[in-house]
Image 1 (cartoon, rainbow, N blue to C red):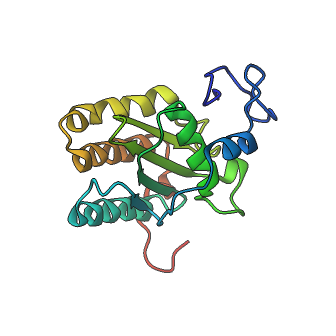
Image 2 (spheres, one colour):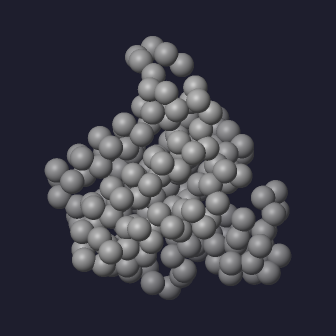
Length: 187
């Protein structure tokens, strides 16, 4: 893991970054209140049209049906320029608590795809449960694949590209039983 502020290597169980002394509480104090987050997908910028948001929400729900342990959150939000985008992504992932209080540490299989169309930056933040399996290079590659669409302000197309790649990536790390669609009532 890398510090979201200075990018120095940080041990998963470290209390703070040894280089810049960043901690999550300091990040929360620095960045303030969490934006209003709706489950699965939120767009505080109004960048996506209602049909695009509905289509992306449906696509995210299909991913969840295929991978029931996955907690996917898509966020389109404008962040202030004073701090690195990676810091904002880290803060939103942790402050948003998308996996809930009961799924912490290696049980946290949340993934946050965050996009700031004003800054032209995006990130994928995996929970600790995914970190051993989803290498930063693979996640960065998914963002690179979406780059051409995002450079042409086709935000929903870029997000769809990431979700398509994410599905292939999850299939490559899934155990056979977790990759199968499940019926209602099945665990």
